[in-house]
Amino acid sequence: MIKEFKEFAMRGNVVDLAVGVVIGAAFGRIVSSLVDDILMPPIGIMLGGVDFKDLKLVLKQGVLGPDGKLTDVTLNYGNFIQTLIDFLIIAVAIFMVVKLMNTLKRKKAASPDIPPAPTKEEVLLTEIRDALRSKPL
Image (tube, rainbow, N blue to C red; front, side, top):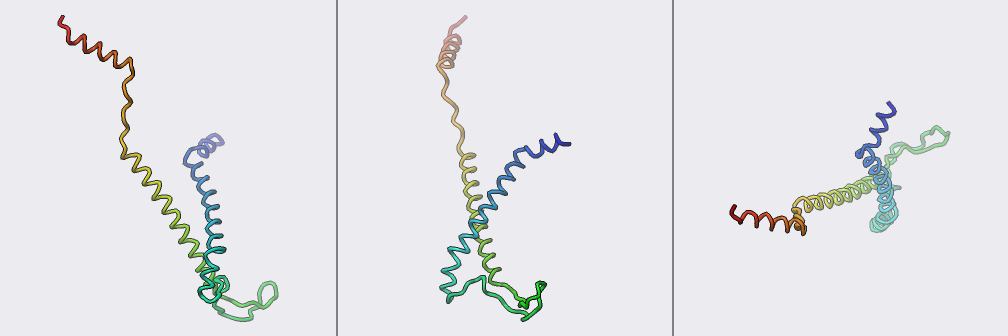
């Protein structure tokens, strides 16, 4: 059973998938930082100094929380908007990478492989063959 698991885990697709997940997680953090730290502050300023994380709709005020403190029950739609922007940027970036890879695959498939030039030995053997064919027996 251990041998079968080792064969399964070391197959190319599984390793490629694991690398893709790790790189995707790191890429997600980069995009989140891009949205949080670079894109949203100027957008917030354009909207009158609004921080999207602070946008919320208070459903009920002064509810006793599990820690014994009074808290508000809120609908945090600003955080949802920010997460949605994160997703859209990640989706567009992944689309562009996939599109680039597909374009490169098509170019590779479209360009026919040029056969290599014959070696000196092949040329010489061809000349000998042709010379033998032209001589009558």
